[in-house]
Length: 269
Length: 306
Image (tube, rainbow over all chains, first blue to last red; front, side, top):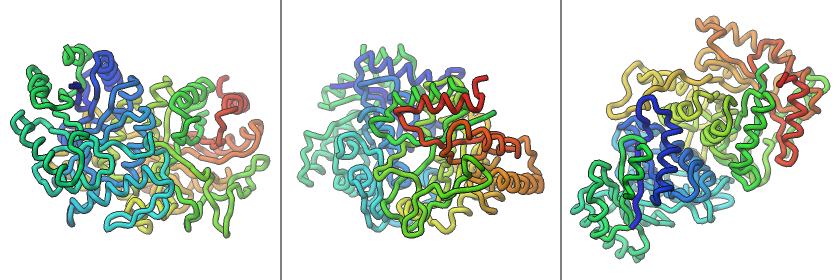
């Protein structure tokens, strides 16, 4: 089982953010951690975090192996070509190390109005499906063509593209809404992971089994989809054992700010 | 003398991150003020939209202009490779600033109507934090209607949208909404944002000039002859004064696509500076194979390291 680190891009007072991220990322790689994640959109706007992608770019420059992840993009509320460009660029800078985490929860009004001028009307799940299809087309087609209810693209040249030519690996955050989660599964051509965000162990076990059933109903191979559990750093003691007992692939410690090197090194001890 | 270089980083194998860092250090060492980055989300093979800056001042006589772009079916085309890429400007800014000590990075120009203004505020705050405040923001309204369609943004009203965003951005930056209201409950921007970057509005027309003087904090015209620039700048000054804005609080950068030899460059650069520009941005479309030699010659011709 692997371990990882997630945090809000906020540094301690008086500590430059760039140096803090570089130090934490280097320590994570040195300590054998598998991943570094930015918090999702919901956490970012509520915690006053700096931008997730730009923080990961700094981590990418400071490391060579660490998997870098966004843990909860609100894809319905973002401009598809703008976000596709940002993510493809980050993947290019990191040499193909980006994991793209999506948050299928319907964005609440503050998040929605923060991200776009979308008034929230219409079917958010249908919109998510259209946005994911358009993003995938921009990432994989030499002349992207999309004509859905929510996106029209007529032969766009979108470069750079994510490494490998198959789009980004997508990780879905668990939500209790099976319709939404199932639609995201169907819309994710490269489904790589499932993310449980700060749920207790019992809830993770139940939700993971529910996700298994949802994948099986769709003829998808449940064993090929990684299970990652995000745990408050304060609850880290014991979390690794619990995660191992639950058969998870990875457990990630979530810090409210960028941790110091010694805190990162302590995760692997 | 503040000279910026406009150039494209395409996300390809040749202009890779190591090249970008070396390029940035070379530019800095040779006395240039900054690197400025164009922006497009997507390109198209044969768009209906025509590129608006089809003429540029001549190298030997900057008061005369020439067509510098390819024209097809009467439509000017932007200078772009058949498989043209452009990486995200803000990530490029963070990467190039990390490789240098004083070099500024500008957008040339960021397509403001395609963005979410409050997401943009967070991104700007992050770039400023990560670069020590070395971001300059050239913003504009774009010209490629097909790109706007792909982004789901109305092309016809992009100017009005941009103007509204400029006001909203200033409001959000100060922790208030566009009408003086606080941000929506639950939305927190990063702390310690400092001042907004220099925010220059791009474009040569009357609407652009008005928005530059009254809604942005500066002006960024492109490919004007020095005398046209001087005349427009006078109008910019008048509009800014009428809006109660002091010239010292505004920033003006003249941009030009230059295709002559390095020894011809001082004439046009000095033409802009003598007319009152705070800086001049030059697009040379440098090649990775000989960019260093070209920049050494340009730096020498302009006396940037003296």
